[in-house]
Length: 420
Ligand code: PMP
Image (cartoon, rainbow, N blue to C red; front, side, top):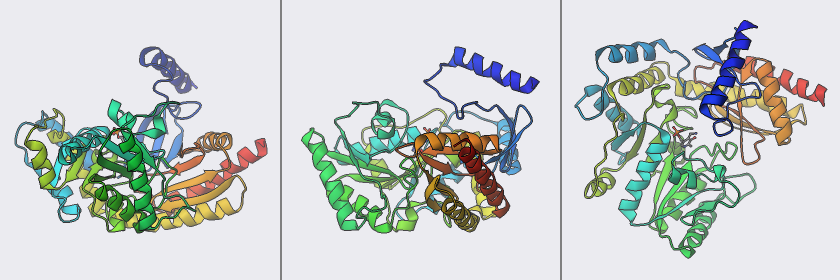
């Protein structure tokens, strides 16, 4: 109980020094996590939690390969990004090698937001446009412009003139390439009517903030075709869904066969050491370079690059993306069994090791999440209605973690039901 009291004290001090509602924490009673290893986290009160949520720790918490490589680099040199460093170049080469032909140039940033911002600047230079399209409840970052490109965050009445929206690949919609291209075309007309020419269409390849949706290739083709027909570029935002989660490769967009003009990366890229990237064709960067330079102090420092290379090493050596498909199939099966046995849960959408499970309504979803945490497993909520349970664990999960998690979830369902 001393440790619990300490956490309450940290919560009070945080609210006083760091703002209250502006920066909300997870869970009714925020957790103070003090250590992690693999798929497990330990809180200040000594409780252990199975991590079913963190994708920053894509290769597991405190992975020894990552820790060693970053520590070694920190002990040698860490500085800004204006010197030659082979570790940084190696990371760019390795990322480019995972991309389809043509996506050959990598620009580093320190967050997913900055990657999308830089991609936006590249797109406006390339197209001469000022208008953007995003999905109805999309999320792309925190800067002023990325907030405008994140309808998921818009306060009531906020409606940026340069931004149009389109429908996610939700069940029941016409997801053919033709219908999707037409939908995108109509959204561009809307933006044109407000005085903006097309520059960029951005979409999270896993449609996670929409509640996790598995877009068929035809829909992704329709997005790209609708962007190109209007003279805009197509950006696959892999910040959240990328890095092997959906297997068997690293990138979700690859499953569609569509080659985007721009790909943005972040979150898992440095296992928590801040680093992000934009990947695009050389000609797009060259056009930008006719008028602009790009330099950002921390993008990528030698230690950040060491983290990036270590993450790729672990993903490759342990074949985690391939494994995510197998473990994910077991997760989907077990979740569907559970959902079929209770009216609290509905549709289960899964791709590799990410799943969205519809809960009957938002209050029930919140209760379920709290009950799950009390039962010792961490997950989150997403979706336009806030009623989709999001399961997005480190890729070190195997079938035993899946079974443990679904058992916890089953107990949590029972807890909510018995409170009824
Ligand atoms: N794009 C997507 C799809 C994201 O999920 C996020 C983060 N939730 C971002 C961009 C922004 O990344 P960051 O928080 O690193 O700025």
